[in-house]
Length: 526
Image (cartoon, rainbow, N blue to C red; front, side):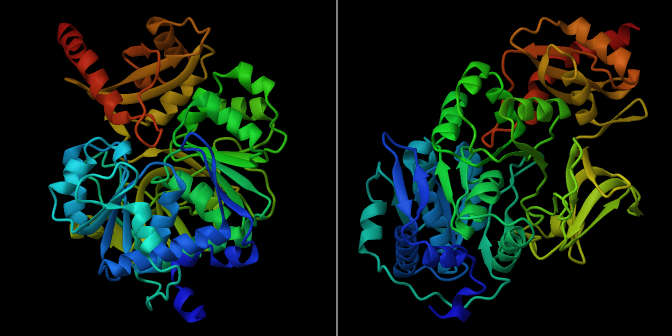
């Protein structure tokens, strides 16, 4: 292979690992009735075959390829095989509805699509109604579509990549769109390589490591936390099709996984399976990482006690590198509540509400080779969030005197109530410190006098017996009165989105429907 052709092509991020460990298992896929094991040599061939397939279809470097595929090893070979050809994969949330899917396919200008019809009930109709030229399906192949395995078998097993530079788009994920339509995030080959190589340079892993991926592969938590770092060094990944607490725990133990990462809501559900946790062997487990959403200290402590391994909180942003804060390289312990210090490479700063750099509190701005060069088709957003290579993340942090960063919330989560700034994460932390509370989400509801007031959705521990009045009193006794939740809705389970995070949009809507009229009426009666 011509080294010059692959040095900037992130589709070859695992090429050296494959040469060093051709017969070693790269992925164990548990999506079907029986496990499927893929060794590095087979993965290398299938990556080349998919790259060859895109070329045979007439796709050119820069063309967009839509992916709507669940957690299975084909996701990996399609995504990175496309990159080898310079084609830009657009991995989509499998739980999106028709309107959003139609918008993304049109916005990205996708020329081809590879989908698993079983993972989304509307995707076939959406693609059929689009202008997409090339349609490929796994398993349930609709009329007029190409069969994925048959097309792959017909493609050449060897591939010579085109000459692309480090600034060429590698893939284009879309943000969740919680504050509007999803935004396409352009990420470059050079930026992805920078991040992956930096992980190995400063926090090296070994081929003996094995990660468990159970959160969606289209999400950075699984891709940046498991797939990219593990397959770059010759390690292995166990892929679960979805998250079910007891199966997750059983697989984590029986497959001797050394690492797993997930959003906090996943670990919240795992801790409810105390009987199973106590019966399983987790002696191979080295570390667990919680991230992609705010993490309460009480949850970190409970996870550490339950599994007896290293626990860390991660912070990342798809368009930001994706990770620019991590554990210190000098071996210092990260205090609870912090996601670490600034990376050795790249730059970070905190900016206050007036646009001035602040030494300890403000919005996190980052600048590094992995930062997006821009959002797709959104010049107005680029002008607002990208300045001289700096990305305004929209995330609020506190920086302590030892250089550790503490996440405080989103700029669009913070709200003003009667002149006081309220950070939902701080109220959530207070609620979760109550012995009966398992999880909590705090959002604003309109108030005719104060503008907005906080309300909360709460999930209790199995033996928890607190009611709304007790929780309101607890917050009044232990926190500022202006931040106490005016109403508390106790639910059996928190609503989660496709990435496994608490879905604040649903929480907001449900609590507004339940309490807004009552809060307005109470304010008028005073």
